Amino acid sequence: MVKAADRAKDPARSSVWLENRAPRRGSGPAGLDRDRIVAAAIRMLDAEGLNGLSMRKLATELGVTAMSLYWYVDTKDDIIEYAVDSVYAEIDPAAIGTTGDWRDRLRTLALEYRRMLVRHPWMSPCAGKYLNIGPNSVAVGARIHEAIRDTGLPVHRRPSAMSAVFQFVYGYGTIESQFQRRAAEAGMSQDTFYGESLRAFRDDAQFMEALEPMTELLDERASHGSVDEIWDRDFAYALDVLVAGIEVMVARGE
Amino acid sequence: MVKAADRAKDPARSSVWLENRAPRRGSGPAGLDRDRIVAAAIRMLDAEGLNGLSMRKLATELGVTAMSLYWYVDTKDDIIEYAVDSVYAEIDPAAIGTTGDWRDRLRTLALEYRRMLVRHPWMSPCAGKYLNIGPNSVAVGARIHEAIRDTGLPVHRRPSAMSAVFQFVYGYGTIESQFQRRAAEAGMSQDTFYGESLRAFRDDAQFMEALEPMTELLDERASHGSVDEIWDRDFAYALDVLVAGIEVMVARGE
DNA sequence: ATCCATCCCGTACACTGTACAAGGAGTGCT
DNA sequence: AGCACTCCTTGTACAGTGTACGGGATGGAT
View 1 (tube, chains in turn orange, cyan, blue, yellow):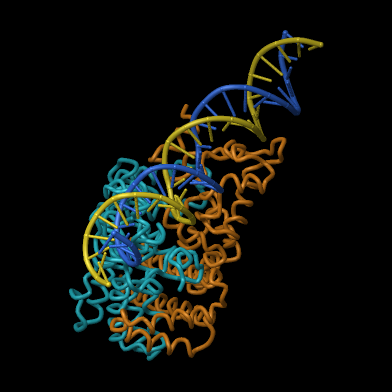
View 2: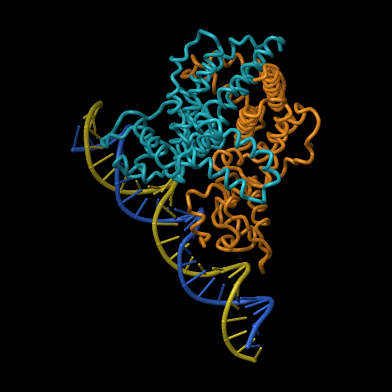
């Protein structure tokens, strides 16, 4: 029998979910519980960011000492992994359905996914660090797969198509959420922060040459509404591009 | 005059590059130098990952104490930000050119970008944490912009199109590099690691239901060559989807 | 000789994740 | 009743982190 501590340190362990199938449940004297721990961790991550989460602070918030947490969890990283899967539950698979136009389903999924990333800015770096395999994320993945299946693309092309759509959503949501985080940290609205960034950019003679062609583009964009509207419109348009691309491939039978 | 330490802690400072325009250069008695520091940091990041980089270890490698580094740099995060921009230089903007079919240029850029992310697995989490504004990254951005400009898309759609392509590349490169990192940490080849992951997945009754439709897909994919080939083919195909989508939008005048 | 900028280092502080061993609370068995 | 046993919680301790602060060392200019 492998001890929990050894399991946690095994580099081959790719996800808590694959090895630790029987989660420790049931609350003890302190009313502790893995779900409660993860929920508190998410609150703290939302409020203070990835670096703001520490075992001691988390434990204090739960009225307990740091080491108590280790009864329910092998590692701090495990908490984060549980938290990552937990927020995937905000994308309700049931609300998407398994029938209807695949375009609509894909768009809804993409939108929900993006919103989730923006709501939890700490998610983006995590998605690049952990495997994101858990009951909730897998459920979402299944919906995505179903939507792609119904496009009519050949089987061996589906993973690529899934990538094309959802890696894009991930990347887009990342940029957006990081931008919002920066603006919030600077104590500015998104719009003034955007303006400030632009001005800083333009003023910097060091980059003038390379930046010149881009300022035109950014100015144009800035005159088309608030930053929020820009995000939404850009995202919708990019999704249209992807859907159009998929339709072309389907028509080509490729 | 704002002191360096205050500047570093100013939450409004979005990038070292925007505020710290006159980099401290020139080597002192110990032969130290910001370029040397950043180069050593990249080596260490490549070898030991994001968590493996510490000021003390980095200093030791340079034959110096930790605090010496702070003469050339305000913060550890700054080193990472310099490192991030530095690896963008691996995508040679000159090699891409500004003429020729935009499709070819886009594909080359995407491929180089992806390779860069895979070469430096620590880059992906960073891209989600920092702004990636620096001379090298801006130069790459300019090439991307030029390629998109030549598609014939209307000006106000270009940012969206850039997002669609490069957020996808970023997301894709992230998944790929993380997968490779996991495999390496587990001491397996990519192929056996892929097989192991599949088996673990399938064996796990807890997720059977949601996973069932996906195993077919994964099996199909596994039978189509090595993991490396799968990455390449998936990526190329997804790029085709995007290019096709852009062409449709151009044709629609949208 | 003095001053000053530049560069480097030793020490110290608050904080991190977590290993380890000891304790308490509850339950069931004898 | 006493004992054993499992489940949960805690105190202490360690090695490591980023970096603030003050003090040297060096070399060139005056």
